[in-house]
Image (cartoon, rainbow, N blue to C red):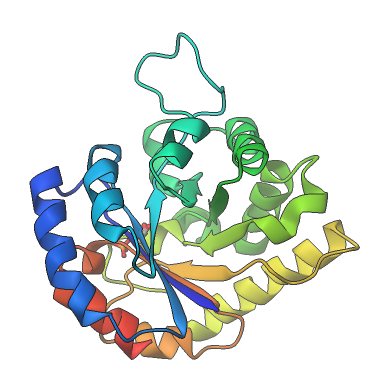
Length: 246
Ligand SMILES: O=C[C@H](O)COP(=O)(O)O
């Protein structure tokens, strides 16, 4: 089933989360042929978890730490997320990579912790503008995937991947569906090549300036198995329309 996910990033207080979900739920009540996911800030997980219980909407986090517990001030473990009813977690978002200096090795450890603990990670990959202009898109994406999945190659079916070209995020300038399709296909070929038992269960999502006007075209593009939506997911009506359009 295709996956349509919101990534609220650092937006929404718990009170705003409550209002959002109250408006959003009736608008997507009849959507049964798409998996819908809300990746909310840590501080909204509790309230969202309560409100989404018993619904078909899944709950996701935007980050996680790889250690199970201990003296890691400010960090959140897989078990803490699981206990709140979280089923997905975004790992290696470009904002974590480029603002917070998250390295491929850290991302790899986070993926391992998620798989060990039963959370389904959404691994984010994507090239920066200068890399695209230098013709390095495929090389960058391949390197990110190989490093992130190092020693986890047998578990590729348990991971989803979001292709998010960094230059397209929040810029109003999305990739063309054709360009996205080429990278998505390339990602699937890498997964096949690194795991001989790969069953094709990884969904490759597109993210980067998805909005009401382009969601349908992206989702109907071959090899696009879902969307990861940032700013256009912050309004419940707009995100519901994206879910319904797609
Ligand atoms: O995780 C979502 C992406 O970073 C896309 O954000 P955006 O839809 O605001 O461009």
